[in-house]
Image 1 (cartoon, rainbow, N blue to C red):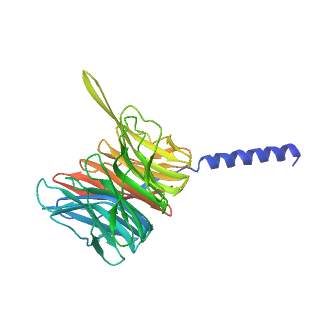
Image 2 (image 1 turned 90 degrees about the vertical axis):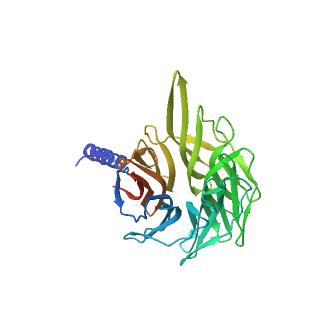
Length: 370
């Protein structure tokens, strides 16, 4: 073989290698796994993974009244784990922690039936059982926790709201929960991630008309709002966050906009932002019509999943470092919804619910890349 032939063979090998590298994108595949349900309405609102054989999802069931719902994946099947309730009505909205024998579920409960105030609910799992831990409330009509994240056993943050718009920040110091002052521009909080005792982020809604106050940061002393680029026109809500490192944080939500000219038209668009250590940047989001993102889970810069719903169909999409690839949409009954997502060792779980006449059924879907 002469030099020209060798050079040609090398170029051919390089071309095939580059083509092969370009083809190494995610082709999402999914399996709908059976999940248990109680009577009436059943919904899963959040999920966390400690191992591929140790995944937890929380939510609520409503037979005659709202009751907490906890389900566990042991590697072969989902099962219901007995959980505790407060008052006459209880719901779990968020779950998170540092280990399978040290994590929290948070939500809301009511002491009386009817139009009465709601209160924060925090429950702790020690590896054997759930314990309700007293948590404080702002004197108001509507206290609720939506998300929880932990740095250590004695350093846990829960976020939520004490009205439809006002934020609520709680901190666990190993002995008791306490209310921590929020920054003035923060609105209700729907997501939280904890990297260190002086590096905690929360997100949800802000009070600025240009949507530049979506994110808040704890520096070990106080919470402050960290501006993000303007997102206009419309109203932005961030519902999910995932942190890989202090300079690599993902956030997902949606932008709602209503345009009226004789007739009004509503627009709902998936929205994703990324923190690079210096600032928040608006990045590309999955393409979907009239849809919102409710959760995001990152395992690496080239493996991020975002989930949500729109038009009665689920939305699940994978980021491979350069583009989003949508998984096939799932439509069950009268409509299906994803509320949360987690990932570990390439194993991704999206949880939520789907509607059938007279009831809602829990939904857990396992995603993998082919």
